[in-house]
Image 1 (cartoon, protein in one colour):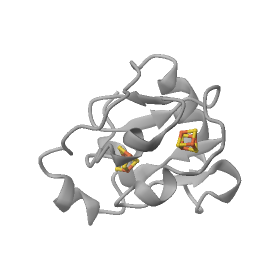
Image 2: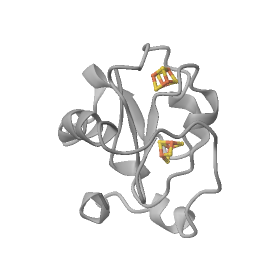
Image 3: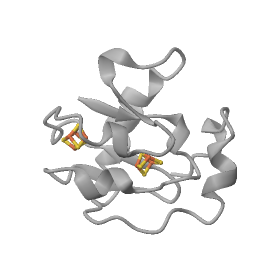
Image 4: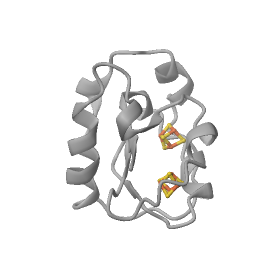
Length: 106
Ligand code: SF4
Ligand code: F3S
């Protein structure tokens, strides 16, 4: 399974959504998650993300491990998203910020 990590928070570029063959992304206010029950491990979403937020769960950067459970939990309650949208208004500015997990709105 692939996992969306902290770098997506307050950016939500949604380029990942446009390429997923099984539509397993779910959308919250300022973050997306991958439904682990839908992901087929194809990996095509990884290079699409402008901020490099998506990783295979066994290759997560240090400190991002909590996002495995968070993707599963939020995918269960957030609605699916099947088409790309405009990024959030301040996406470019937030793309520069490394420590932004506290801003994840649920
Ligand atoms: Fe979708 Fe493939 Fe990315 Fe999984 S790895 S979320 S199936 S594009
Ligand atoms: Fe987020 Fe990157 Fe997708 S910023 S919405 S994981 S393209």
